[in-house]
Each structure stands twice: as structure tokens, then as C-alpha cells.
Image (cartoon, rainbow over all chains, first blue to last red; front, side):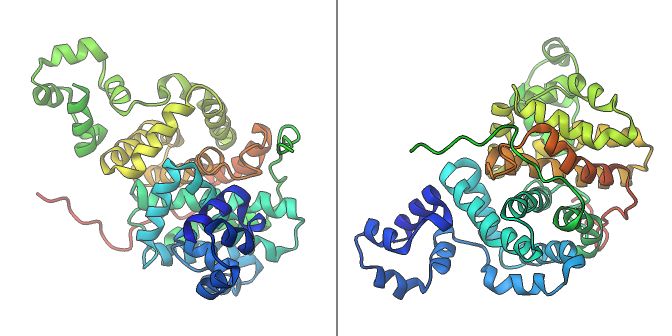
Length: 193
Length: 193
């Protein structure tokens, strides 16, 4: 079931994949998938081997209020990565960098299930939500790369509070600052019909 | 020679490694290393399999002037990665993510030879230069991860100009904005003597 789920989520994205389709591909009854995983959300997290469950950590991020969301997101990232989520997070990044399919799953996880849900509370159009979300993701994954993968000083051993003070405002600008969201140079190609 | 150089640069960093030491480890005369590579700088770039030579690309970045450095750095990164440097850059990141030694080399390359030289023109103390450089590196490597590794839209297909407008100001804040540079929570551990 998890292999079929990975294929479906990587090929179609979280929104495009269905429990029915995944069950069919795995040769089982959809009720069995529901029984084991409860929801498409939980099945996705299991398929990605997600380092944390957004349902559990995002409420604390969102409790911060609009003007503190940037700092709050950096704080949560640091507490997860300096805590239980680091091994699974590193494994996910290692796999995504060398494997296109895992890259798609990590992208879905990060953009649709984590950052998109934070930006989604701010009342933008879908297009602007996606653009701001990708910008936020670029800073957060860059922080992970520098602190936990490359271990570059002084970020590698900096205190949480000093990183939140330095990086939080940049994330905040991506969330609520005045900016023209990045747009393609030309219309995106249509998917093959 | 390159294997000995990689070991030396990863163990001691760019500043700590010497051509003499590398030559000794490789069992050759230092003059031979000079003959083949010309300088420690070029030997380092060859050892890292650097995607671009900072001596060739940084002058154009620095020509922009203090208040345009952030935009200029993003512009150069995009032109390199949407041009000849991408395959070598991706290979370097893939290797660094799964191999601690390559991570050290990439860190040296990015921090000491690229970002550090840009921040080094701004007149900060060494400590502040390193802190601001690491922040800049976090945003730039994050942009690479989102656009070229995870290929998340709309950043993956955004025009250079729209990315420069969105991300340049954030890099500029790290370069010249008012901020308290990140600092360790406690004194860094001494290296083993």
C-alpha cells in the first residue's frame, strides 16, 4: 500500500491522488486503506515518512498571529530539527536530492502540507499563496541545509533566539510583506493531453 | 594530488590546508602541485569540482555597489544555474548531502570562497562577516533547493527578474540590514588538541 501511495502521490500530487486509486493499484479494498491509515492525510505522511505531523505542530505556529508568523515558523522548525524530527528529516532530504520521486513527495509535503497551510490562512489568491509559500520554503530549507547538513558556523551552533531574530523577519516579508510574487517568464506548458 | 587535497581541505579548511602539506601527503614535490594547479585557490576549485570559478564571476557581482549586492548575487546565481554550472552544482549538492567530507568542502567553497568574499567587501568584523555570510548562504542554497532540486512551482519556472525582485531584498537585509548576527548559545567547543 505504501509503495502504491508513493507512486500515486509523486505522479499526481496530494490533491490528484485518491485512496480509491491507490487501493486499486495495491490490489486491496479502499476500506482496508482507510482502516490502516484513517485518512489520505495520514497515508501521505506515512508514505513520505514525514519527520513530523503538520496537524500536531502547525496549530502552535498559527497561534502566533499574523505579524509573528515568520518568527513562529522559524522557532517551530528549530525545535523540531533540534529534537526528534532530525533523523527522519535528514533522511528525507538525502533521498530527495538523489531521487526525483522523493523530491516530488518532499515538495508536496513541504509546499502543500506545511508551508501552504500556513500561508493559506492569510487570505491570498491560490496563485499568490503558492508563490509566497515557495519563497518561505526556500528560506526554511536553506536554513536546514546550512545548520544541519553543511553545519556552517555560526549558524550551526547559534542559539534559537538569535536565529529567530535574524531570519524571522525575512520569512515574515515572504508571508505578509509587499512583494510581487514570482511568476513564470512565459505561460506554463500544458500537461500532455 | 586531488585526493590528498580533498582530505586536507575537508580536515583543515581552506585556510588551514597548505600546498606543502598536500604535496607531502600525495608523495610529490610542492613544485609539481604549483605546476599543475598554479595556486592553492585553483587546487581547491579542482578538488571541490567547483561549478564556477569565483575569480571569474564575483567581480560582476561586486560591481553592483553596496545597495544592489543582494539583487546582484541572486542574478548571478540564476545565470550560473540556468547555464553551464547546473550539472556540477547539482552533483556537488548531491554529494554533500550524503557525504560529510563533501559537505565540509561545499561549506568551505560556499562560505569562504563565494559568499565570504562578497560580505568581506562590506567592512564588518570577521565574526559579523561570517554570520552575515552564513545567512546569505542559507537563502541562496534554499533557492537552489526549491528551484533546481525540488522544482517547486512557481519558483521552478519563474523569470529571473521576478525572482530577483522577490528574493534580492531578503539577501540585501542579510548583507547590509540592521540585524543582530546569530551567535552561539554557549562558547563553541575547542577543537581536540
